[in-house]
Structures are given as C-alpha cells and as structure tokens.
Image (cartoon, rainbow over all chains, first blue to last red; front, top):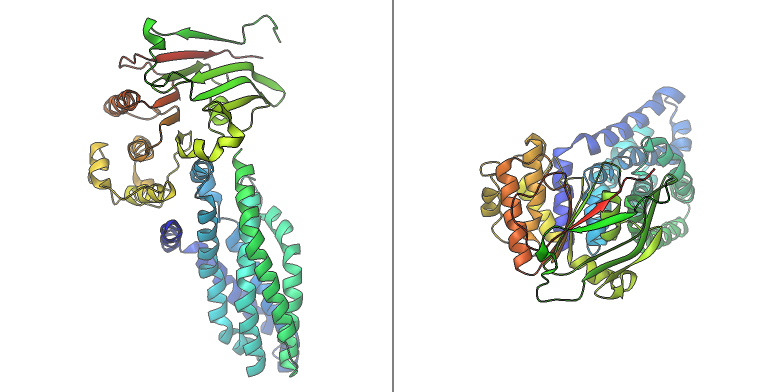
Length: 220
Length: 231
C-alpha cells in the first residue's frame, strides 16, 4: 500500500521530468546506429559484434539515468526525512528501483526488435537477446540504484558512479553476450540464462538492504 | 581553546519553567553529549533532557552547533561521545519506537519541487502510515488555498515552508524537533505555527526548536539552552 503510493509518486515525477528517461533511450538508439556506420554495413561483421555492442550500449544508457536517481530527493531533504522516520525507507527504495526499471530497462526490452534490425540479428539471436534483457535489465536497475545511493552526496558523482558500478556490470555483460552469441550459432543458452537469473535473485535479496544502509550513511 | 569557558548554560525562561505536566519523567535525555566537526569541538559533555509538555529552545550563534545537536537528538547523526535515552532506555534499543514518535523538520524542506502541495502531503501521509484526511482544508488553513495543484517550484520560499510545515498538522508524533521553523515565514504564518505549537504542548507533546526569532506567544514550559560558540 505504501509502496503503491511511492511508486505512483515516482511515476508522476518521471512523467514530469521526461528528459530523465527519454535521454538514455535516445542515447541507446544513437549508439547502436553508430556501429553500422563505424565498422561498415557488412552483415557478418555486425552479427559477430552485435551481442557485445547491444549490452555495452544498454549498460551505458542505464548508467546515464542512474546519476540523478536520488539527487533531487537528497538535495531537498526527502531522504533525510525518510531516514528520520525509518520505517518507510525500504518501500521507497523498492519503488525507486521498480520505477527505474520501468523507465530505462523496459524500454530497452521493447526496443530489442529495432536493435535486431539495425545489427542484422537473426530470429534465434533476437529471442536470446530479449530474454537476456528481460533478466539483465532489472539487475542493471538494482546495481545503478546502489551506485546512485552511494554517490548521491558527492558533488561530481557522475564519473565516480561509473567507476563504481561498471565493474559490477562485468559478469552480467559476459553471460548476457555469451547467451546471444550461443543463440546466433544455434547452441543452447539456458545455462547462461540460469546464471543471469541467479545473479538477479541474489541482487534482489541483498541490494535493497545495501541501498537503505547507503542512504542512512549519506545523511548522517 | 579557552578551557575555562562555560561549556553551556541553561537558563530558565520563567519561574514556571518546570511546570511538568502529566509525565514527570523525561521522555528524551542526552547525557554527556559531544560533537566534533572538522577538529572543532562544537559542544562537549552537554546534557539535555525533555519531558512531555516542555518546549526546549536551543540558542546560540551561527556555527555554535545547534543543528548538529538537533540531528543527534533526532537520531540522524551519532554523537562523538555520550548517550541518548528515550523513555529511560538507550536510544539504540528503542529506535523504532522513538522514530515513530518523532517529527523532525530540518533545514531542507523535504518537499519535491516538481510535485504539488497535495502530492507532497499524500507522500508524507503514506510515509508516516497515516489515514487520508482533508488535505485541502489543511492547506487552506495554512494560507495556500488555490495553490494546492501548483508544482511547489512555482511557490515562494515562504509558501514552500508552509507546505513543509503542514506535516506538523498531519503527524501524530508527540516529539517535535524543529530546526529554524520560522525561516522565510511571514508574521501571520509564524503566529499560526506558534499557536499550533502551544496546542501541541497543551496536549502533552514536547518540542525542541532552534530559532533566532523571539517567540511571541507565552510558553509556560519554555526552557532555554544556550550553546556557546567554541573555537
């Protein structure tokens, strides 16, 4: 019930600050459309680099949205108030995370057919990419919420956030792109998906607690 | 540093300063509190206590450590030394109960500029697990009639402050900690807030506040605590 009110608030804020989520999506599309121009439109070449390219673009665009996640609420004292009140902090973190996924992760998933078109991916690889995005983007959101909570008090938090969070994205990048690669040469890729799911569940269990602690430390 | 300088002095505002209402025992107690910021001791071995029905006004120059003391009392910061007690139990043990009974309003407004006054209030209502009530009437009472649906960034500083202070009309908490609540408010709003504070004290609540302004109403249970600026 509390979470619903909080989620409603986050969605309302996203509706009023469209640049926060539109810019990362446009960034994602532009980066992907640069690759065929840069490396040449040779389909075989694009097909080889596509898995890595899609995921690197996804990581960077999610990172763009992450920086401002907690900034406003930190500056105007909302987080301080929630920490002082204590009991609703976790619901706030969960609402933030879910709203972040809805505004940055879900659009990437919906854009995946367009990506397949740009990079000349085949049907099987497209399915694998959509599945990795489905499992991977919530994990991206969780990690970026964590990074954002840790760096919200820093003046120039952007680059610090990137340095802090990008290394954590590495396992995700490895297994997600390897799943797409396996699918594109007709191999099984359930193993990689299982590992992605395991990482997601682990993060879902631990990250919200870490975020609430980070918020508490930052206001005290 | 001048060692002989008094660390703090507590003066009773009126003879009736210790008119303690129904609860004689202090609800909040700080013992031997110290706070150090950037190698400067803001205060050391400071003891404060607050009972229900009391208004504790903390005075001192800019930088004397008033806000730091309030943040420590609100459980937001840890004292460098000393112990806090809520209802005679160490604060660490009774933190959830204390937080549920506390309304802290600090320097920051706690309102999001992109949201309207009504949306900010409903957010606070949800955060404090309160039942819905007539927010329109409350905002009208605070002089914000007609501005309920305007994003708070369009409001003036004083109007934003009024939205922020509206929480004092919503909260069932008995202990209020207010850091400069009168900042940016006009005379009528200051009067309204003081009247509300008086009602709260009469109902058995307790208030700690800092302000550089004179309180215009007569508070029977006012206690003043002067923090001395230390080098």
